[in-house]
Image 1 (cartoon, rainbow, N blue to C red):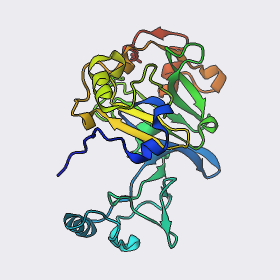
Image 2 (image 1 turned 45 degrees about the horizontal axis):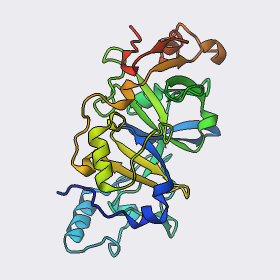
Image 3 (image 1 turned 90 degrees about the vertical axis):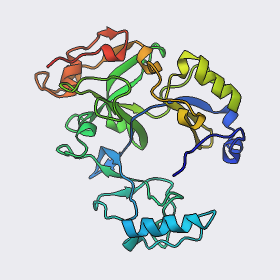
Image 4 (image 1 turned 135 degrees about the vertical axis):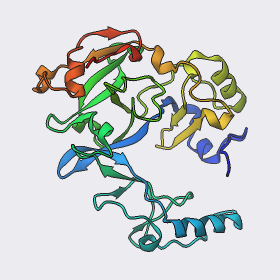
Length: 295
């Protein structure tokens, strides 16, 4: 039982990655996704970490109680871990040893599984893609006005090898108030797309002040994208702050619907999210939670 908290000392890896000159972006409260090829086509993948079975987890935790590091702990990948679907792949960056993926410091192996059209487990992921048209339902800054968000149908081919955050009605208690139980709404947001316009310096006291005082700070956290590819993350909880905490900043931004089924050659009479949003094409809303798709 422990809590992760931030200290006033900057992580050496962040310093070495020049976090002070990085791009600060909003950390969204959703579930991580990945777009990559599957069966020769661009495809959406859901996060699935391979975790140890009960016996191995118990042995690992007992080891950690008497050691300061997990470096000397020995895993048997084939016997110690729960089974995963054959189509599972380890995430980029996972180290390998003797051809086997190596668990991280938490004893997990981050990875992905492809989201099938008819998947029950990942049905909310599936609602945000249309494989027939090869598109994803994406929330991103408008190309003409970065202060305005837009909901657009983006070709999956343009998102290849990118990670995104799935947010919506049935994800993490829906802090952004999207959709309703009767008409759920789920959208994909490319990681790094929502840049923080006036980020604070990477300094403990100034970050704490920023989270307390700034409207733009009503976010789950910050992810700094460093030039060398390193990502540095800070969650409100790391500073002892609550989330959600009032209206999220995402909900204060106007949104325009930039989506047309005529262009996508899809059936506008269907009941999926693409058809529902296309019927609102060109409309603007003051807040994203104001969008109601009806029955």
